[in-house]
Image (cartoon, rainbow, N blue to C red):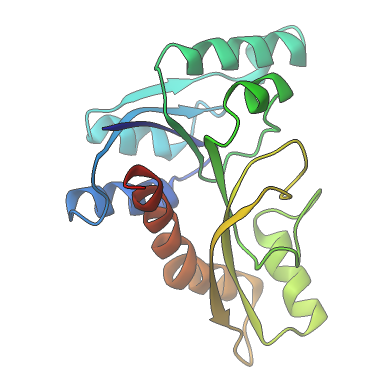
Length: 195
């Protein structure tokens, strides 16, 4: 049984996709041990509590500096003996000591087909704004392992999504979530748990 921790900053729609896939049996051999957020108001924490999962907030605002926050974050993650850490819209840079300690055990979902529209500054609606501004006809999502760079780790799964005439960043964001992110993130977790 793979013990998984999910790290989130906001509403937790990707977390919900994982929970729904677990409930439906599309993810097997997995136990979600904890959901960690940097944001005390993250609705994802409520989703976790509703599923009987430990919901923990570690906010950088509660620490004197980034180093103290990073140490607290790594210490909290260590408490749960995790085999896999899933970044599902976690908008905090993962400390290098955590990347080193959990090498090839941290995955991230990114709302584009890497290497397009990724790296520093590309998150949330900014990704979709950039894709529309560039005029791409296909976008999508990528699940990848986390390494020391920003969206540079080995790719696990990708799924393409068509860009339609008249798309706004919000409409495109929703389509990428529904057709790609919510499909391939659970699929990647199941793949890792059963390989």
